[in-house]
Image (cartoon, rainbow, N blue to C red; front, side, top):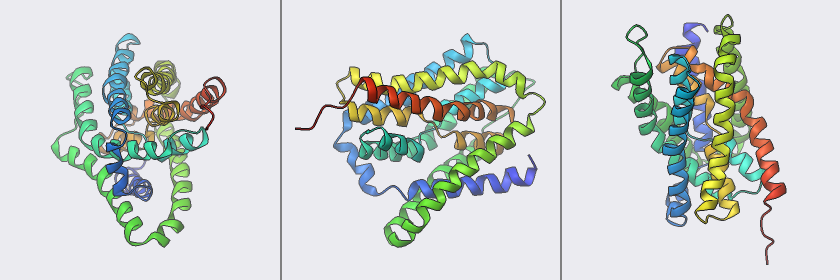
Length: 289
């Protein structure tokens, strides 16, 4: 990709997407955690501990090359987003809980994502392959996630009519931008893409399946109802690959690190739709009295 596109346009485009996410949030979404503390805590545990641990094990067991290992860990550290809310709506999850998880995850990820990525860099990278996420870049990650979301929330609060006008265009823009960034990332690594698909394809497929299954079955094991477990599954199972790729290309400045998120994006929607169908078919919600 052209350096100007990477350093200016990608962060700017992602900012608009995160503003769109903020348009869907209100302070009540953060306060609602007190109503469902158990579901929220279990979901966060799955997201920040179980999935990160599984991603690490996949990197080790499948012997991923260092740059791709860092990329998979970056993907694992990325929160869900508005697409998770859409799937939760389509497959009858608890949408209010989903939005709450998105709100909480967006804030926590600004802190946990740099920590997880820095750990991954220190663990997987050799001396001759130095990439870094120093404090200034940590602040950049924080700014990429938090500031646009806050702007979106302020727009929703002070200009609700403008919010209604912006919602649909920003959703469309998010989809188009995701497609473009995948194409751009793949094009920039076109000479190595076949190798990357071979090296990271299985890892991303397994990670996607594990994310969805853990997100649903772990909450169910701990007594969370089916609708809330569906919300957890899609929030945990649908990672913000756009955010992961943008951070890889701009903050870390390495297109190879973006490959796991790019490959994951190809599988993510397919597996989420299949998973949604299966839980709807074989684990239907109880009939309302």
